[in-house]
Amino acid sequence: MYKLNNNHFKIFALIPIIVIFLSINIIGNTLLTNLRLDVTEDNIFTLSKETLPIFKNIEEPIVIRIYFSKSLSDASPQHGIFFKRIRDILKQYSSISNGMLQVKYFDPEPFSDVEDRAVGFGLQAVPLGPGGETGYFGLAATNSTDDQEVIPFFNLERDSFIEYDLTKLVYTLSNPDQPKVGLITSLPVDGGMIPGMGGMGGTPTPPWQIMNQMQEFFDVERLDANLDILPEDIDVLVLAQPDDLTEKAAYTIDQWVLGGGNAILFIDPNFESVNNPMEQGNNRIVSNPANKLLETWGLTLDPNFIAGDIKHAVRVNAAMGSKPVISDYPAWINLDKTLLNNEDIITGDLNNITLGTSGVLNIIPETELVIRPLLQTSKESMKIPSETITRMPDIVAIFRDFVSSGEQLLLAARVTGIAESAFDSPILSDVDLIKDEIGHLEKSNDDIQVIVVADSDMLADRFWVQQSNFLGQNVMVPTADIADFLI
Image (tube, rainbow, N blue to C red; front, top):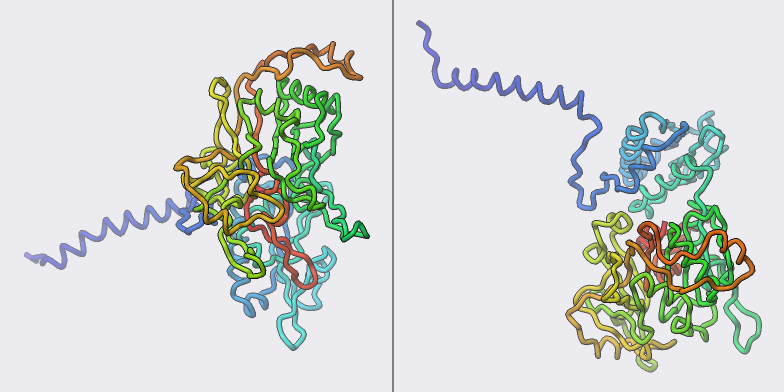
């Protein structure tokens, strides 16, 4: 009889293992094509919680056309890698959308019909060498009503924000009827003039990028700080440093929130980002009626202190007399992911938020509302006296005299729960008849939904975005997740 040696036994033993392995691969390739394990350091292939519903809820077809020149990949391997990343993201988006998002790829060779279509969409060619050859790497997207969104060229500087850019584009095309945001603000978000020396002339300032971002996602309506009724079609109310808010307007907002309206309040005890430097820090938050709203929402803001964090201080150029120095400035804080609430849908996928001379929120001990922190300092914090934060602060002295408290300071919070009115009775106005029909709400029927942030400077360009020039076009490159936070 033929005898099997040990080697034969090993070979036969491997056969079922190989069969099982091949079966798993076949099943995996068939059933698990849309699943992937993201082992990248920054989870660049993991879709955020906010992104998923946008693509699941597309109701009409959207076509995305990617124009990418192979010659560009040959000349710049980095662009080739970027293209593959975009392709992978769009593949996931298309799968989630159940076919409502269609993605097509084109190589616009010179003098071809494809190149003509790319140029017709407004895509931008880049030179690839001295021979005059050019390459394309852009996007043109359309919906069923022929609305169009274009990215003329994918700039490598926006690599970290590509999911945001693509999501914004699809959201805009899938939501032609944008939600409406009411905005009450004293901030120079629409630009203005910086007064010249001696009152002569001045320097114009452009609109803030945060305003541009809001207008891309929402229908933004500026509202008067003396309003006595809110438009019925407002979905969210944003109060951004409402220094001129009147008592009458505060009552209207109070009743609107109690009736189910959603609100975001940015209130800053030391607002720096003004057009006129002489107005810096001159904010009327002590007597501002917004404080009444803040208190009925379970919070207070002490105007005498600024939040400081020595561990997360922003490094700035300062001066000691005529000598320039580089110093950490604890009153400007760059919060990393560890200080953002990763369990809240607003902050869960953000990485960093920069604030400038933020105030400190205090929770009223007897409040029955639920106050959920969104942004906090580390324990290496200090309440810096506001009087030391002037138009020309001694940054080196603030750093030198810093003493950590060992406690985290609250900078932004979500407020929910049954709230009571900040007012005992209606405030008389020109629309009393309307208010009489509605009646004065003493408390909310359901949980209110309010976000409070103790800083307004974070909305200014210098705290979250840098401008660069690419082939004659201005490219805005975010340095912090402020736009993501607000949008």
